[in-house]
Length: 217
Image 1: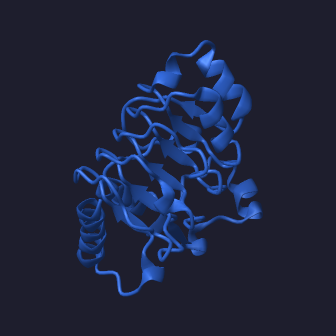
Image 2: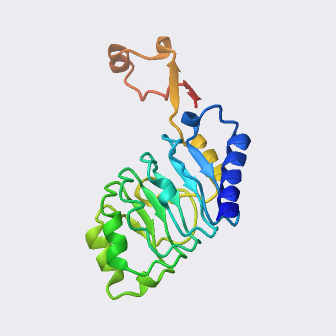
């Protein structure tokens, strides 16, 4: 267990160094995917953590998430989880949760844990034993009405209700940067625009006016 905890700690510290974070409060993103990790130390020092990738590891316990109330995207797919009870019900602002390809076996118990996630929109539970239970999809949709995408396989990034997350944070950050708000300024030479009286006197169709538009990201 000590070796497993040490590996998890090293993975976290490596990420902090890679991203160049100066203090814990600056940490909004952690990417710990695909490192064969069995255990992760408490992430409670990262109170503002929003995006967390822990997919493709060997995680069996999620107690390290107990203080991360600001999480909005959480990727736990392809691990060895058998139960999430008591580990996720405090994540009230979570919007995306990937739990597919684990060993979750009790549908009612799992859904009960997720019912407090009033902002949850995108949920993956496929390739778990619970997904074989009778009326699985109807049960999830009934008790988790905020979910708009259930077991959506694939990756990409859209808009609005059809938005799908990237499992690679670098791709996600690039896409978000390219879709952030724009500032737009337009200029028009009003000296070349005819007045109402001039248009009536000339009695002819007015030609389109030239307009210069500049956009800033």
